[in-house]
Structures are given as C-alpha cells and as structure tokens.
Length: 187
Image (cartoon, rainbow, N blue to C red; front, top):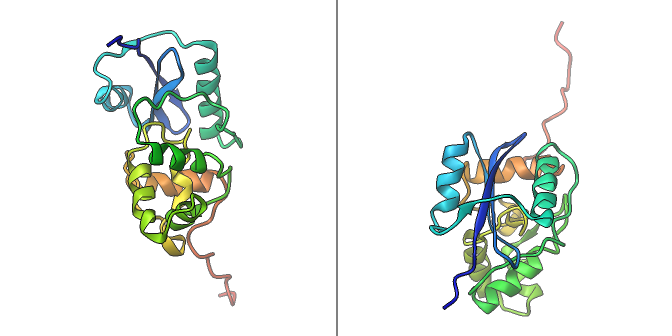
C-alpha cells in the first residue's frame, strides 16, 4: 500500500494554538485550540504518527488564514475546504456533508441531521458518534450540532462543552437564556 505523505503545521490564533494536517488530497486533521503549541502538536499527532512538520500548500495556507480570522470573530465559511477523510464510514461521510451545510451562526440537532439524511430518530446516536469522531472539527462544524431541545451536548475537543459554547458565542449564537432586565434601580 502506498503511504500518502502527511504534513502538519501548528499555528497561533486569538483562541490559542491550532494544528492542521494535510495530504496531497486535502485537509486530514484539524486540532482546535489549546493554550500551548506543545499540547496542540501532541494532540494532533496522536492519530498521525507519520506526519512531518511542513510548509502549507496555498490552499492549506488559506485555511490557516480563515481559522485565524474565525477565532478573531470574523464570519467564515469553511464549506469549500477540500478534505481527505480517507477510509471513513460512508454514513459518517454523509453526516459530515450534511453538517458542512450548517452555516455560521446557525445550529441544528443530532436528530434533525439524522432526519435530513432520511434516517429515523435512532440514527441521532450515529450522528453524535460521527461528530465525536470528527477529524476536522471547525471545518466540519460539529460545534453547531446540538442535542435535543437545543442543549449543548457533548464536545470531545479540549475544553469540552465550554469550548463548543465559546465557538457558538463567537458566531452570535446565544445558548443561555437572556439575562433578566433589571426591574428597579437601587439608590
């Protein structure tokens, strides 16, 4: 079997240090931010033991620029990024394609995505598993997929559901009920 060359880059954003890995086909892995480059690199390489640090291709450099702008609060669309998902399960690929259609500032639920794919409500669990195994979080916006009733649900990235909530807040999505308006003034 011919091994595909894998390269990676660790870079700093307003949200912390991110990592991206790519093959000749496209982006294969994305690591959401951690507080330091060493941690990000360790997490990124956990599943890419043969990857080498490298200079990004023009497309990967564009993705890095978009990620930096995203964490600075700019509305970014990652749906055109070329991915290399390798030997992913076919249903997971369908789930990822559907999730990529959920745009900036919008959310959906595991159940809604399952229904959108023509699967029954029991497939919501499969959607959740696909999101948990998402190799390119942010690019496939799993942070925009919520549990039933709009609850935040799980998030397997560093920082867990707090990181998910923070990313949604960057996009203007308000998960918590609005703060009550002060009813009287105390003098």
